[in-house]
Amino acid sequence: MIGVRATWLLTVRALRESLRQPANEVANAFIPLFFYVVTVGAVGSVAREAFGVSDYKGFQLPVAVLQGAAGVASGAGLAMTVDIQSGYFEKLALTSAPRLALALGRILADAVKAVVLAVLILALALLYGSGFETGLPGMAVLLLATFGFALAYSGIGVAIALKTGSPQAAQAGFIIFFPLLFLAPTFAPIEIFATWLEVIARMNPVTYVLVGMRTLVTDGWDWPALLKGGAATAGIGALTLSLTVLALRGRVQQ
Amino acid sequence: MAEAIATQGLTKLFGPDIRAVDGIDLRVEEGQIFGFLGQNGSGKTTTVRMLTTLLRPTAGTARVAGVDVIAQPAEVRRRVGVALQEVGLDELQTGREVLTLQGQLFGLSAKAARERAAELLEVVTLTEAADRPVRGYSGGMKRRLDLACALVNDPRVVFLDEPTTGLDPITRDAVWRYVQELNRERGVTFFLTTQYLEEADRLAHTVAIMDRGKVVAEGSPAELKARIGTDVVALTFAGGELAARAEAALARLEGVQKVLRAETEVAVYLPNGAAAVPAMVRLLDEAGAPAEELVLKQPTLDDVFLQVTGHHLQTGEGAGGAGAAAGTKLAGGAP
Image 1: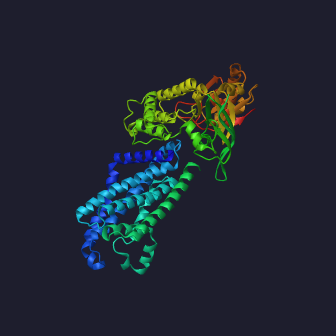
Image 2: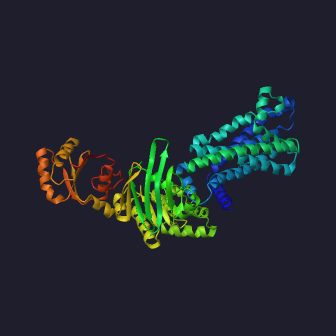
Image 3: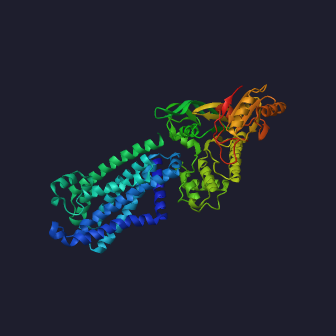
């Protein structure tokens, strides 16, 4: 109970920090929206003939949402390095709050921000003409999946930040995401990939997260795809949480 | 009297070769102000970090506020307050928010934390600035807020690691007055590291001197100074060569217990300094090493530090004993 309260207090503090630095959040929103509009503009008109996708705006919507979530999620690591370098992290570590709450508060705040950004991207995509096969319930599931993915993914930046204390290294959380995204069916369905790329894409957990989200937008309720997406998110989360716990132990009890 | 802090063989190794803290035994009684002195790198901060559960000791035991720091670190944190060397604050929050959050993380309700924050802001005279972001605070204001953070959980033992470094004299004095007040009126135990020897001399009930990871002297300032048992004649020369010549000459003076040299300064320890000054001046004339300045003084903590470590304590601006050369190693010894 103490841990839950401490996590919540630190989440609120991290969210308040974002409200006081709105420029950071504008950058987080700009990148996925820019890529969304540009990609749809470049490929959208040939998507049906090239790879049989009729709603390319919908096809790209989960990409923008994931990109936004990964961008926001890398902020936790960066913010953590600011706390470490300013000495505030140690001030918090010297309270009686469980130390895991120091990491979880940041991570949870990023997940909340990722959902807010996903709502914005979703609204703009719908205005832009994207369809959404599963309607409002599907949108809620999409937001839930975004929350889970951001929760799982921000652990990478936080773990790196705790391990190194370096802002440059912590930003690697976002950099790692790009190869993962480009090695997934981001621009076209996996079925048209070259064999070598398809093999890699099928080993990439982001593929399952993306495909699960995409079915909500373009296909309808596809439970196996959603379960695979959930499992991939859980796998990423288990890995990043373990790394975070190890890095946290290393930082406060060397 | 009960012990607020007790360590036995407390040791911290960084890698196989660096013995930052080397088996120290400390005993700090409740209600004391304990001054922990040492050069940068002597192991003071590492000791504080182990006692406050930020670092795990490599060996030995430590109890703080009656609790084992290794077995029950969370309980130790509940009972102590800590202000580390670097002021650690969230610059985007206001002073009031920083203190309120700190209180809540110590388990206070939102209302109690707000009330405690208001009380402490008053104490550290930051009420007017309480609702401004910390990034707009001056260095002194940040240090005061940091000190208030260390007191938010009403601790019985407070660790202050170089709490007045970088503060202007007025703020430094205000911090020390508050420390004394808390100690006197509420019996709070303070464990403080400082590079200001005069302040340690004035405030601390007990002082320990740390050198290369070991405690090399411990006692009340008066006891430590009495151990020197001599007067000190501090001489300054125009150059190092003259000082070296003077060192050799003065070592021959009758009754001299020790002569130490640091660059252009020479310190002579002897029982009756005033009586020996004429002979000293004659000897220096004969040796062709006239002193530019000669000061006869009672031993200070700086002299104690010099005697037990062989060097002056590295000090900041306006601190330390007279003639203290920053971090200079002294050569010499008993004649």
